Image: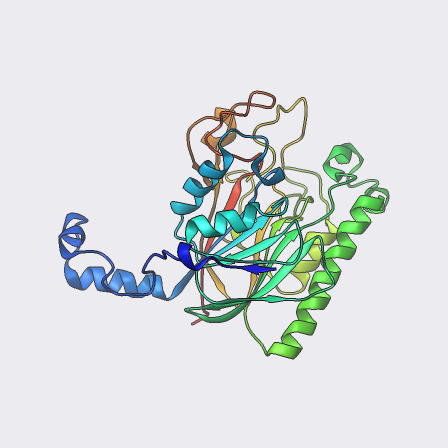
Length: 329
């Protein structure tokens, strides 16, 4: 479904040169010429934001208002949402003056500019949309791969028993889903013409760029490795290449280490676009997780662990991933 509420289309003037008054420009320490140059740089970039809403927000009090507050602060061009649980993504799009393209109950692509839902064979684990952006048309995917047989539980079996780990039904399903998304991407590009591609979301599997034998056992996780081999750039690792300095533990900051292992399983992959900046946004329960992570940006202060999470300011068990992209020069 593609949903937009004309009464809610109160959009920020993202594509104008003079969207701040002169006195605000001067208050920011910029001359008018510097302000125009800054805006021109912004107009050559695309801001992307991906976020798992955690059962649509049902696990946190006042989640709709909290989700809207998070998104309102982002000024994102494309938003990729997972676990929409039906209408949570559409509701959030309306609050932000964006349009939601959603193929099923799970994944949604939001845009502040014209967007077209593309029918694919990937429901309910992925939704694709063609988005008109200031950089031209972009193929954007919101992805939520299968969650069963979470393989970091078998960390001690790696790399010795990697074949057995990757053969688990859930792991094999994630790999098949990633390959299907790539196959559908090829089909869509043949039909629509060549364009940049963004594939982002909750993959429920780590990255071989993190599991490199230095800080974690060596593991060529098949689902994420497939995108790397298909020419996609992992935006976060492009900016923060050292997993020791930026571990990027996107799930789950509000679980104790006795309950769940933490890892980076939420990604923005881009092809045909350069990565200018990337980081993670959210609440962290443990100071040790954030102080040593140069790729983390705090939102709302410390978060409480499950089952005391209902009052958390950041209404999810996943960190969001942010990236600024531009066209290759």
